[in-house]
Length: 449
Image (cartoon, rainbow, N blue to C red; front, top):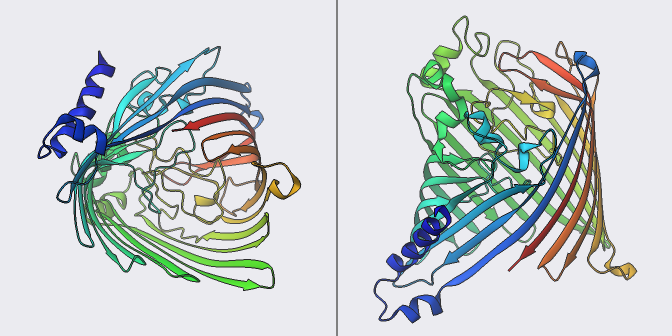
């Protein structure tokens, strides 16, 4: 019955948006349907020697995907709906819920139970270069992101306005009220999701939204992004980056720099600074920057990146990333604040996002089409992270390997191996702990239609 109700809601949304057409046949002939079917296997092993507890191993299988229905534009109006689902099977022993309902479990639900949700559902209106949208939407910005590295993407709910200039610049202004984490079946108020049961102690309120303003500008050889996220009585976050592309002989070289600034504001500024607060009497004040160089030669690409989250002993200096943003150039496939967006976990941090962390990343990507192996590619990445904070005993080292195959942009399969030594995490008050070894293996098959 749940699936039938969601399907009817998707259909009714489309009909409302095309109410001025003459026949039902026109509604369906103008609409477009797309989606994907995804299989995901994951296994995560942890060596808990440092905590003198037993090692753990967890795994899971899940089958799911998305189904999207988008109407054609009628007098500037259009609508869309996307149905999302994850369905675990053959669960045996300890379960890795990161492809099922981990966020549901953080809110007291059953993390091992699959779910279905209307992840997108919006009404939009376009006029010349302006576009207005209200509803649920999957978005990709530096600090609020879909982060589709598991079964499903994260999504938000709110109102959005954009203005395009000569197809080169995009200005965005939005008020975002709710967030659905990728392992959640519910859209939760933005600040309530970030702070969980501690929201009143931090902000003085039970709810709160985020005002987002952004500029994306692209030219052939130059681009930049500037985004500001204002969460009243919680924090303000500023993100900017710039990229420059040049050709040297047969090598395409891309150079980029980024900067992030975060500060608590309003009630949070006062409450977090109080003795006994979650952050140990420290208001949020974090600054980070990154550098990146990418060299591409035919079917090979080499990336070298550096990041530094500046140390400030008087402040909560780790980056605060409640809404699935993992913005640093040194970010890896896993381990770098992937679960800071879990319900109530925003003031925790790990690895390169901990205040004082410096990271150096090297990555090598190779496509094999020119060798007669059409569609095959490999990726090898390495990250070395240091920090002189008490408890950060050993440098964290991340190793990622991916073997992938794509066929006609329709079907893909990937085998991923991830090994992290001295995996490091920080609590809200800055205390650090390390895990001797995290090993993870994934098999992901995806069919798009």
